[in-house]
Image 1 (spheres, rainbow over the protein chains, first blue to last red):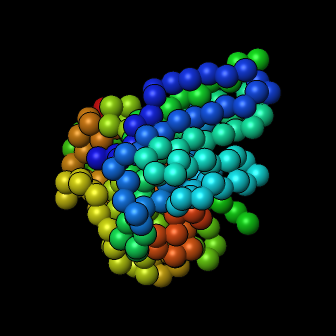
Image 2 (image 1 turned 120 degrees about the vertical axis):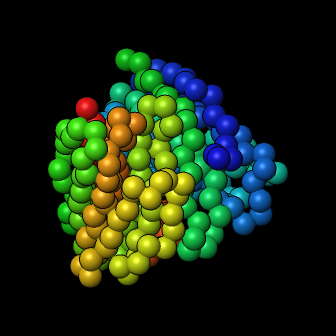
Image 3 (image 1 turned 90 degrees about the horizontal axis):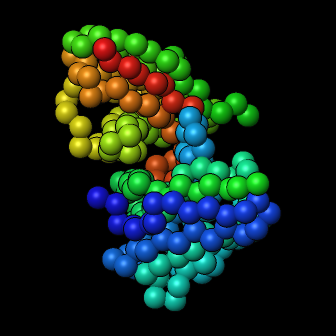
Length: 111
Length: 114
């Protein structure tokens, strides 16, 4: 079972920041938070991951609370092409760990 | 560098038949994972192959099987197809096992079982 809880959907205006929340209250110390997204009819795409520090790359920023029980994915300037299902995933380290996808959150970016 | 390729992209079969799907990972990637995506169950992990050996397996019946070749290409097979096997089957590759920050997904094979 997925270890994360996400609202089913949200929307934002094009050009504005999109803040996607995720709860992972049962996360353990060695588990990472990963974000993937899936644009309609395509395979999922890796966005970012983090352990406890905030992370930023060319696509997004990941803010993890100090207690690590929740996180927020930030798309700083959302475009129409960012409309997708976004999956927040908690995964441990080790070769046998695997990605367990939940239902994700559907982000709709409006013009 | 070419991405993950999956063939065929679309497939229609009837109940009771079997099907084989193919996945070519990114050059140099040695781990291949398979997922099933349906509207009801979402994205579910099927299995992972590395160095021609199945390393990890999800909760699917034995009708679902796979293999990996020495060039890292992978195939998955579903025997005795059921209507519920209609789904998008996704393949993902990564350099090493557990290296999910570098896991790249293919476009998927859309299987319809009639």
